[in-house]
Amino acid sequence: MSAREEILRRIDGIVPARPAADVAADYARIDRDYARRHHADGVLDLFADRVAHYRATVLRAAEAELPRVVAERLAARPGTHGAPGDLPDAWLAEVTSGLVRDPAVADLDGLAGAVTGCAAAIAETGTIVLDHGPGQGTRALSLVPDYHLIIVRAAQVAPDVPEALERLDPSRPLTMVSGPSATSDIELSRVEGVHGPRTLEVVIAE
Image (cartoon, rainbow, N blue to C red; front, side, top):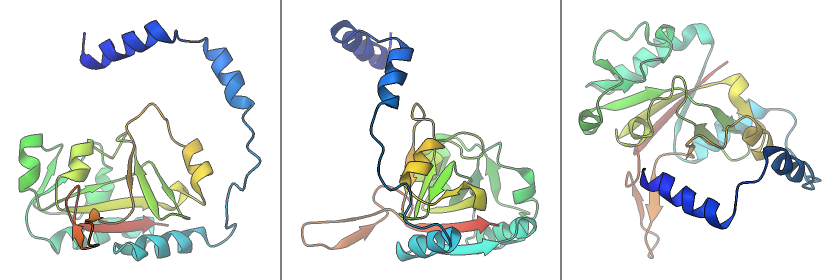
């Protein structure tokens, strides 16, 4: 029994699991009389603006242009880049060298960067969400290399948080990215790259 299973076993001993139907009924009774979105139009423009505000580089490209754009961005940073094994081959069709699929955890620190897809994005907050499903790789792949290129399909961009959350599976590990990793100490000195990549580039595929 793992530590996680032991913790859940003890919790169940104190608060027994309820039937799923009861939980769903309680969830349905929650009052949701709140604004679901702040903007009806210009969602992609808003998302691009908010992501750029966090010091990320934002590019917009037609789906057919993705292979060229991805190859150019990776070529600008010499070295080997990591990518999930199930990232669409078409996106990497013009990358001619320096690419490894599903790199081992021990090798991540030596990579020049990583390229992944995402699960959803939120225009209002400029946030990209990875649930580490298809095309996204492991959480470590998105956090250890110092450069991260994320491809966001236009249809994945939700106007605001409520609609984005409805697209996600809460049982999956979620990584929310709002710009390069950054933190500030008590004197408000900004330090980048402590908990993730210092450089974030986002390609919006329209």
